[in-house]
Image 1 (cartoon, rainbow, N blue to C red):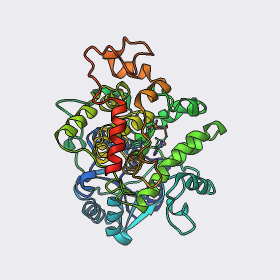
Image 2: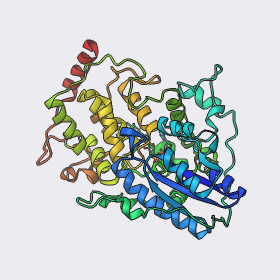
Image 3: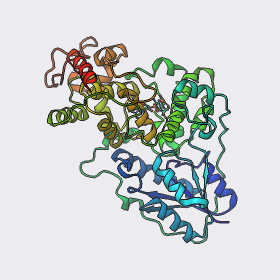
Image 4: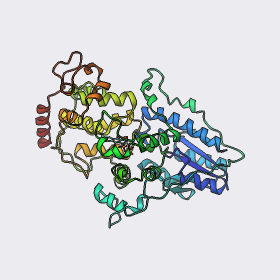
Length: 442
Ligand code: FAD
């Protein structure tokens, strides 16, 4: 029988259970819906539109090479999926389980017509639960419980697919205008290779370095991490494949980090509003008004006068990605040094990250802001200048803040002689005092 595969953040052929099930049943067509309506203000951001364009192009070519077909439609997912399934006379719609609340709502409206397959987590999410059947709220116990299950082995794609005799109409990808035109801010995105092939290349590149991950992952000047986040977000590679590929004992630290992704999926299942509402009340008086807007703009442009923060924010703008340690420093700086509410920062990340992910982004921002259920208290204030020196960020700063490139390793974190580089928006000690006061008064 003919079926339809509805693709979302699972843009791959290998270890793709929805495609595998459809292919086994007979002819199928794959559908991607560009849906800017259902997710509301979580519609795909600017940087990810660039990624999506290239990823869909690659997937379309891969499907065709095996005799399959990709159909593109724009509009509300629930209607588009139903309509294309009707046009195909498809009884079943196969899809991968996704955890974003807006996707779950669409899945519900499709009722019996949709068959959902686990493929976006290491272990099917409903198997890793507390004694009372709830998702875990703290990572440690979650990881211990997860490790009691086998991570399923990845499955390879069939060599040949068969497609229905009559295919539904498809939009042209270029007509979606996903790429920036003027100004073309994506010039620095050439470091990425969206699609399954690019994902596998990154995995293989990282394999040789995985043993060094524990030592290098916090050093922004080195390429010590996998750079797989956007590939994982778009599902161009399955987390299970990454897990099994990096099996050696010295990759243990890496695998544990990878499990944070599963943990975050549990967190948005338990708390669909994780990106919008505090998990724990924030007793902080945030700054608002003109001066706060000015500070937020300086932060987003990489002009705070704190070299490590600015290097991160400029790396983000130029490449759509930021090193994890620097994400922590930059996010904490916005929330605690500038006392700007974390949701503004999370939205900026949403629009500028190629790996923007509702679960990972929301969980990490709440953690930094001290409002997450498993997070540090607000009064723990990161010292950006100390962090910058401790994690050897001098070369990283030289790359992204070239005005400071001539300074020595000792001077560059907190330069006395700044030339054209801006003065700090606020001194560290003063910011600390202000944050502690705001937290007492909030
Ligand atoms: P690696 O260190 O190689 O890790 C491998 C994979 O594990 C990552 O690709 C990611 O899928 C997962 N992972 C690692 N750390 C985390 C973590 N702390 N939380 C959840 N998953 C993790 N990650 C996103 O994928 N999307 C986001 O929108 C996002 N927003 C963030 C916002 C803030 C404020 C912070 C502090 C972190 C955020 N992260 C986010 C987590 C982390 O910074 C990135 O996953 C990581 O930097 C991606 O680089 P990598 O693939 O080289 O990571």
